[in-house]
Image 1 (cartoon, one colour):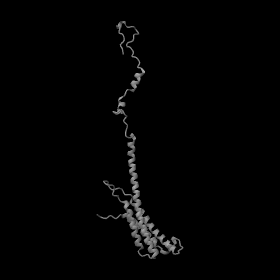
Image 2 (image 1 turned 60 degrees about the vertical axis):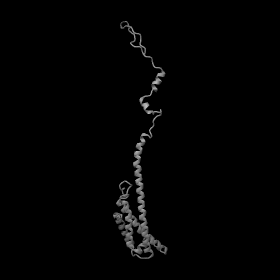
Image 3 (image 1 turned 45 degrees about the horizontal axis):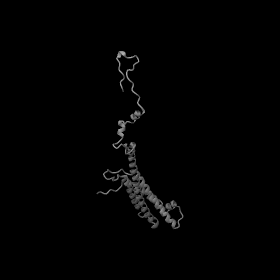
Image 4 (image 1 turned 90 degrees about the horizontal axis):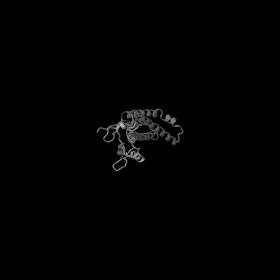
Amino acid sequence: MRPGPTLPVGDLPYDWPMTTPAPDPGPDEDAGAASAPTPATRDRATAGGERRLLAQAPGERYRRDVQAPAAAGSSRTSGATTGVRRLVLAALAVAIVGAAVLTLILGVLLSTAGTFAISGIASIAIGLIVANGAIPGPGAAGAGPSAPILTRDRAVRIAMGIGLGMIVLTALGVWVLARLEGGVMDPISYVWTTFGFGLPAQAIIALIGAAWGAANGPVRWRQ
């Protein structure tokens, strides 16, 4: 800005300007001022002149923190379901073997000797197998024992159901053998006429044995 002409104060006219107005900036000067880098703009650029970008979106970290516990919970649920399925399959295998032995004795040998003992032993074995799900597991390496996959009450109910199913399967097996030999009675009538209270009593023994095994098992051998 150039200074204006100076005159003695006493000689200044009434409307004489006190300062000389600065000229308006041209369009080139406005564009230069707008494009001048600010400290914030400079901070966004790297030494090579490129903008620095985050490796991931700001919300991605929080999304991963939420998804990780959900994935872990889903994995534990899947593992528990698989463990219960294995125990049930093992108990069913024992029940099928027990039913086959009982069918052989009752339907082929036409005897009841030892059938009560077989019903009790097989049902106790079923309960002891299912009880493995009601105790803490070994857990992963470096971690503590894992939580049981079954409650004790649920283990008892599962074992009792499988034990009762063993006796029902026995009754059906004996009836099928009778039908193959020319029998015409329905299953309930045939079982009641042939065995009376024998099979119902074995069903009660199976329920008691399975409940006892699931409530007190599994068997742990001392090292």
